[in-house]
Length: 141
Image (cartoon, rainbow, N blue to C red):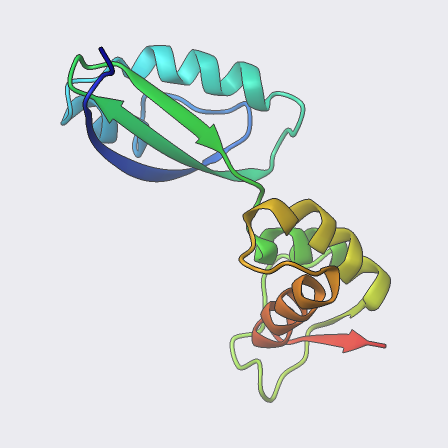
């Protein structure tokens, strides 16, 4: 018999650095789930991407078990890494803080493609370019 899905929740965690401190502890504790088991599994699966922020979708079941899926890093994080910036512009329409090339956008789009709701690479590049513009990053090409 299949387990009954009780719900899902999302977390954003640094790869390989999850602990029972917030947000993991409270999210798992209020649902009565084994948070320490999640921390061990997440850190093992994400150890190859140190320092990256990764979204995680956790699905939990009626028997207090859970599964999780690690998504690709947010486009904004990948853009900041590509430009070497600490953060985007506070006023992106007026203050431009960096530049990114179309080749860099294509590279980011390949990483994000499985999590985007588009079917072509050009559409994915366009979506990433929109994120860049909203952060005050100029797109060359």
